[in-house]
Length: 372
Ligand code: F0G
Image (tube, rainbow, N blue to C red; front, side):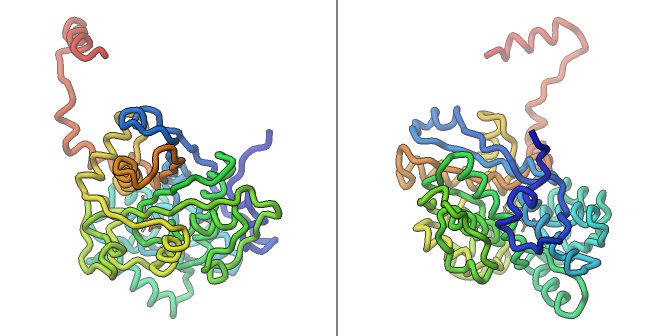
């Protein structure tokens, strides 16, 4: 058995990297595709419902897939510094891969609006953390302006190498199932990931996505593994749902801070993915998102962050309504790890803790009361 060394080594022939580019990797990718058992039974769903748990990447989110390729390319082109705007996960990944590459990471984050674990990651990896009095969209605007005049490589998903890396999650899913799912559900913020998955699924089917040239044609398999592509379902937080409103949202607000974005950069690509796949966009309220996060954790043993729960939240609703047909194979991407944002759970979770004296009898009483 050979040691797994990350997605560039795994998929190099299908990524637009120069042959002599040194891979900057932390062993990202090859995340588990977990089949849910309890929730489908509870709701009477007879299809197959999977979660692709991207929270198990090295920095705890799917961003590592894009960052390994973007930083590899940037360093190959001679960059000494990288920059991004972020709601938290991109900054964590940028910080870690910058250390690995020996370059500086500058990260612009909305002050007070990113989960503490993500901020800790940027700090511990030594990124230059610039908190702006504004939101993600302001940060994105600034990064694009600065990128025009300053020699720093932008590693947000407007960098096409990010999407090239992120498309590999679709490769892994088709390889694991031996076919494409019927429906693929994702949370949508800046809209890069849904665009990347569509690229990946198209390549697996040997069909070009309409924007694959724009994003540098990857190489197709000689023998496509599947002739099918899934419907792409993108779910947004109701307070940050430009794809539902039809245009940018000025002051996006949601408890799912990772997707607190009003002006998605991959607007055209995500619309193309939705249309070409015959999929849809929908929205979930903050309450629905948090309820689903807890449902998943308490019934399946999987702890994702709030934004990630939007995919499953939408999927479950669409299964119940029949929009997703009985018998379908459905994959939901869980984009980030719940450990990044424990505050959200502990706000109410402390009430559930039991306190007793340090005595055997007291502990046994609690056990008796709670045995299943
Ligand atoms: N889920 C999580 C956990 C995220 O961090 C993000 C985006 C998304 C979903 C949405 O993905 O932007 O490709 O549509 N986070 C970015 C960041 C914006 O800065 O970490 P998208």
